[in-house]
Amino acid sequence: MLLSLVSLWEITIKHSLGRGDMPISAVQALAWAEESGFDWLPLAPGHIFCLEDLPPHHRDPFDRLLIAQAISEDLTLLSADAVFSSYAAQLQAAGC
Image 1 (cartoon, one colour):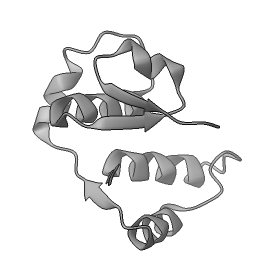
Image 2 (tube, one colour):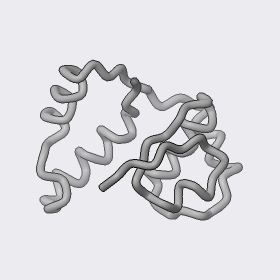
Image 3 (cartoon, rainbow, N blue to C red):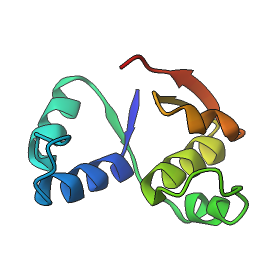
Image 4 (cartoon, rainbow, N blue to C red):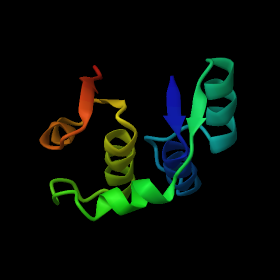
């Protein structure tokens, strides 16, 4: 299983802003991911280039990067966000 560094970046920003929806820090998230056996998916130039071809169904830049990574790497993306299904990425819906 892979966890995108984009997700760690988003956790860092949300947690540093003191948002109630991100109670853990990036350090805590990193420890959890490594203990859980996740490997890291880095951000690569091909992922950025894929953004140019994405239709504007979603405005969140982190989510768009995750979608671009999934499409570029032919990976299944796990998300509870219904907008993700508007893209050509393989999607596994996650329950809330």
